Image (cartoon, rainbow, N blue to C red):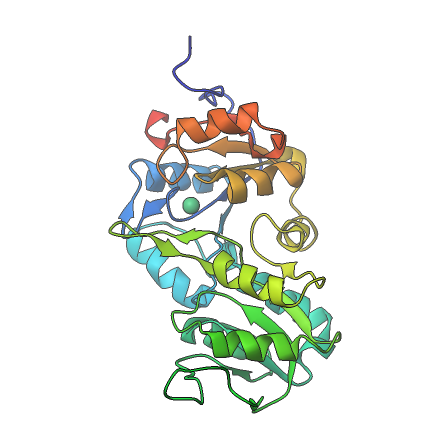
Length: 297
Ligand SMILES: [Mg+2]
């Protein structure tokens, strides 16, 4: 009996695809360490003229800056092969310019601001520390000032997320024409030493405040990212495979887009998580295969 809950992708079959999509942290690397065998596997794919893309939910830097990390780690990919929620937000806003007619209220960080402002002729405002007007911290402000106008609210990783930002975003979104965009709904961020709540926590707070409005989710497993890959990058789903360590983002993203899916055992989700998915109702969480890059001869 196999020690894994899903079949191992065989060495014969692993090169049968045209396009290979990889999650980043937990799949190709852990923090600043490449996963054993990952660089060699990506090199082998490129030498076989396969399409290779890194599909990250990290919106906290531009793809240009992300490439610096990818290159430093030793992966031979180009900027156009890195797809982040920013890539999809930028493409979407270019096609729907009314969302950038005014400004972008950004619950995010300097990296997201740089990425969006560099690609779109728009001002992103709202990042950084934004203290409550009542310095004593008692009660709620009698009034607040929305310094500028926003055509959309974008939610990403924000180490300065606050109640005042939630108030501001909620009031921008009271206008039904203001777009409600979320980079990802990840519950946690990759971190070794303690648990870091992720963008999903900020998104959930804002979602609750603006019910019944629904956001557009630009990262995995959201629809816009899959549509972008199929339409703009001309991926044939039947010849595409998604590798990832998380079931709720990577594997679900592959499943809902008709890609084959391969769970790697080097990140967040464990054998127990896969077994729970197998017994659960949402079959899009169940990977088709598992694989270790070190298995490639
Ligand atoms: Mg991951």
